[in-house]
Length: 236
Image 1: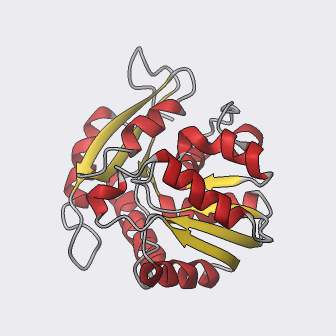
Image 2 (image 1 turned 90 degrees about the horizontal axis):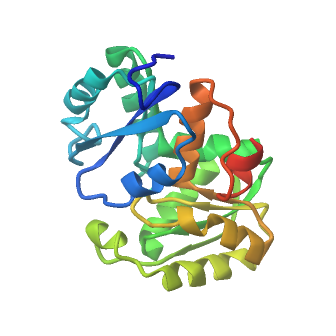
């Protein structure tokens, strides 16, 4: 682990997120343990490789000597998307020399840590895209017993989803016989609601931004429980 500066005696974590995403940065700030700082870099989506400028932006981020990079992006709404993101992250890890963790893969690792097999899913998408999310999640080895989206009309407008709408969708999914509820779409603001939702519905919540930060912390050896944001960060 690289100790980079006075404010980060334990670690600097690099965080990358799509340029229009205004949710990842403040949500991950909520989760920082003492002695850790998050340093941001943005990229633009598009192209056959998810983002054509992602490697160049990652190289710039390495100037601040992060111990690892968390990519605040889920690709579950595209056919084979999680696998494509993993390939991209693995390529970048070889390029920059530190672990690069994507949110889609972190979601699956979090569900396994919680021993969840039957999964309910909350998305910001419509029914057509939800069907792709369901297929990707089942391909990862989980049984999807319920899925519901907030149906944001565009990617930028996901960030504007009212919290009441998010609560309503979680309540609908929670009525299913699921072991845990997974939320995909890193622009959907859920992290601050995790504890409330777990208490209300009696099921663990895997919010994608919390999952990728959890996975990144554990990858660099920081095992502190992060209190107030659900079972995953408190107990695993």
